[in-house]
Structures are given as structure tokens and as C-alpha cells.
Image (cartoon, rainbow, N blue to C red; front, side):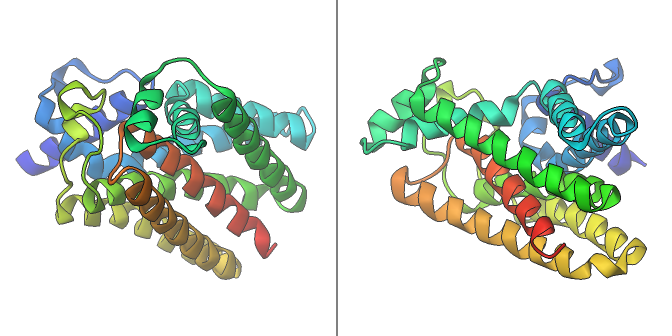
Length: 262
């Protein structure tokens, strides 16, 4: 029972860190919990994706696919405070140009958005919207499923990076300082387990989507490894912004995969 309560605490800490959702007072807080709660990042993604999917479903009763998708995406951004999108924009600004490692790290610390960041956000959100509209026009249930799965699976990608790469920035002044320590193998396996459980549930309920699901798993894995290689080459590690950027890239890759075999 004590173990279950501790894991519930860790989930609430992850939920508080990545969303606007209030958590119970009894949860409390210890800095070390923020590092350990990484194992539940995909579960937070599952909830964010479910919230967005429900907004999509409700909006489709009143508006065309394009409007419904826009509202669903806005709901997800509102719930998370644009946390990952901000990391993607900062990463585009820092790594979009041919600058040195130290200069890139300095640029990513700047709260102002530059041309690379603005273009990155426009392209990322535009592509996600285009894919989701196409999925809705084919099968609204498939679109909702893809949205939920992509949110969940993409939250496992940052855990992989935390496990695979060292922290590249100044850990003492990092916004995500408690995350600037390598994740344990148990943390990574737990994060992957959440994705596996969701995937098995989808396969059981909708076996006709196995090809899309398999392609989405492959796309998420390839995108994660590609981000790992890129960050290792440019920075020799990751920053908090890079974790958010990786989530965005993997989410888009997964959505594209769900659409590819429709």
C-alpha cells in the first residue's frame, strides 16, 4: 500500500509539473520526486491526449473538422501551458543556425522568440493540424485514438533522452534541475510500460488498426533516436528545452504514421 501511495504521489508531481491541473494538498513535494516522477510522463500524456480527444469529439458535433481540430489542439496547449511547444521554439532558435555549442545554449536561455523559433512553431502546429484534419475526415475514432496514443508515446521519448544522454546545460541553474540526472533503467522501463499497455488496449479493441499502430511505434522510435543523435552531435547532451522539442517531434512523427496507412 505504501508503494502504491508513493507512485500516486509521483504521478501527481508529474501532473503538476506538466499541466495546469491542481493536485491534492496531501501529496506534498520533495525535489527528488521530480526526478523519479519521469516514469509517469506517458501517463500524463495519456490524460492530456484524452482531454484533447474529448474536445475534438464534442466540437465535431457543432463545427467542421478544421475548427474541431483547432479547438482540440488549443485545449491541449491550454492544459499544458504550451510547455513543450515553448521548448520546441527555443530549440529551433538555438540549433536552427550554424552556431557553436555555447552560443546555442545561450540562445535557448533567452525568453524571446526568434525567426527560427517562430517558423518552427508555425510548421509544427500547422503539420499537426493538417494530419489531424485528414484523420478526422477518414475516421473520427481513429483520429481520437491517434491523438491519445501520440500524446502518451511522445512523453516516453524525453525519458529515453534523460537515460541516454548527459545534461548539456548548467545543472545548477537549470529550470528542470531535478531532471538533470540520468534516469534509472527502472524509470525508463516503467515509462515504456505505460505506452505498451495503451498499445495493447488499442490492439485488443481495434485489431484492424494494427498496421497503423505498428508504424506509429516505429516512427516514434526512429524520431526519438534521431533527436538523440542530433542533440548529442550539437550539444553533447540535452537541456530542458530539448526534452520538450523531442516530445513535439515524436508526437508529430507518430501522427504522421497513423495517417500513412489510412
